[in-house]
Length: 112
Length: 113
Image (cartoon, rainbow over all chains, first blue to last red; front, side):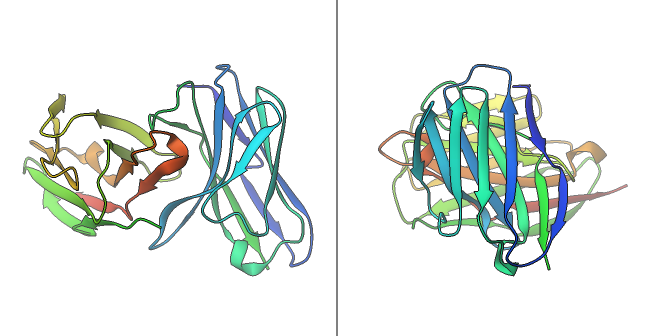
């Protein structure tokens, strides 16, 4: 296990409120990723980071922002949550550029 | 973006049976990976394949990287109840970074005793 902790694990919020999800890893992995998982869509990449303060957009980045001020933490922020952002969010890390990812346990977000 | 077609979408099998599932793409991949997700958990890597034609085993699991580089197959032999879960394939594009990883929509495996 890569020692990946996501918080909160469950959250219910209302449309228009800001939400921040946190991913914390203890493996000193360089690369960190945020995915969302929705029925029929598999896992889709939101944003990723290849180092402290180095981030880039993924396939479904609209409405999301990220920050990485320390190697171990990668934050995903929804500035103004919408119902379409109801999903299960997974953080993943890897020490290489490859696809061998270690995933966290997920954060289930419901936007009412 | 790239599309991965994973089939079957779901399957019921009896304990002890062998299972086969596959993933096909419209694009060439350099790496194929297979993950398993248990209920309420994140995906866990089962097998990684790096070369066309490669056949790799992990216990009762065997996966193959298709010769055309556009498909991959996963076989589970002698299924047991703990094989229940969702199996995802993932293909990594030519650029070779996980940011270019495309996931299939999953095969849900359910085992009946």
